[in-house]
Length: 277
Length: 277
Image 1 (cartoon, each protein chain N blue to C red):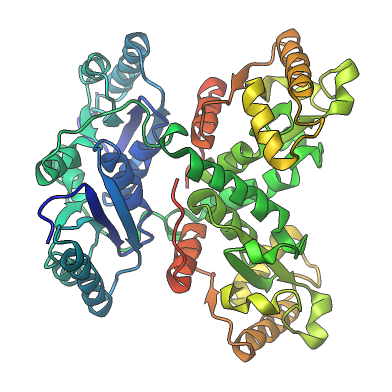
Image 2 (cartoon, rainbow over the protein chains, first blue to last red):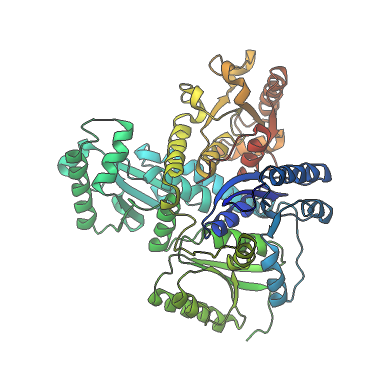
């Protein structure tokens, strides 16, 4: 039996999707210098399932001799009690904030099963989100420049600078209708804003990226191609950035940003409201 | 000045994307019977920006006479101190768990700016996720049945039962490569598993939906069409479900589930690991 180790088993346990437990657990664990082996156990709503989860946690403990870390959120007291009998350290992801909030609001909490990622909570905004995903897919990669009046945001940039994942994230997470339009090699001789986009320039933003990063990404797709060459990437980026400046289109360098960071920075500079679900 | 109201201004403030603060705030607020007006303020990394946030919070307080609720996560002490001078109730989304975790681990926390949704944390899994999004887009809606050996999961179902948003969520959130294949009206006379999918039946799952819900969704797209009629929807669903049973393909009814719930239930029944980012 090891008495101490920096490899820790981590369990995310919830009576819902466990997405909230995961999100918070990741954020908190990110502050500690440990290595983790993570396991997510959603929809723990019955005594039977709770007993099987308890067994799984105890097995991890027996195997390593080190208490696993359990991030959890469970409403039913009888289910919760079983989980809490496991040999582990427990972190209730909601309770720590529910108590002070209850006091500040002078209201009693009304815990509900599977509340935070369910459809029932706000059916209208849920349908909006699905519609945003459809709109965004239909306007991916310049496929269509119709119905731009319905777009919340239009993204421009060279091929492989991060437009598609950013647009999908905006739609999926925030219910934003996002259009993206790529400038390709053929556009480069006389680069201009597409006519269809001109009337919507107030909601148009550019993405750009460092040459080395673009070369790297394009190489992964088409190794040793002209498309992935330093000369081609540098030339496209130079022309597109010059166009952004000439047309006064605000733009963002994505080289060191995750999709989440690009999306939230775009919301921030555009002042667009998140249509939350 | 109102002394009490159930409409509350809520601010999510962070030196990163604020996604963790939002996720936790939504989950916690969901337990209280209040109406909220929400505002997200990401990338609060400087004293200047902190002062402007403080001003915004104070203005909300002055307007309503009710202290806003601030869910926040900020590393820099001088930035944090400014926010905490606002007229509001404060909920530090990470700290409540960091202290007990630090004690249990006997390790000091090492708070880092913008840690939880940044690219630097785990560049490989980030690239995997981007690759999963590309793969999933290339295999949306039966567009391609090539390279199915690379799929983590294959979803089948009638048109408009939730396949596309589910696949995109699986790719985006969990780095899962998801293929989806729609059965269309023309397939119905002799419905069978597509030949290309047969070898991969072990990773194939069905989605189905209640007739009334499908009629509703299809009507939104093509009102009063044959495609959206009760008869057509009922007939397609009956045939596809019979096929799922005949071929022993596990399936899920999506009528009352959100995309998050469908995706996490699929992971749960398939035993697929989340490839987290």
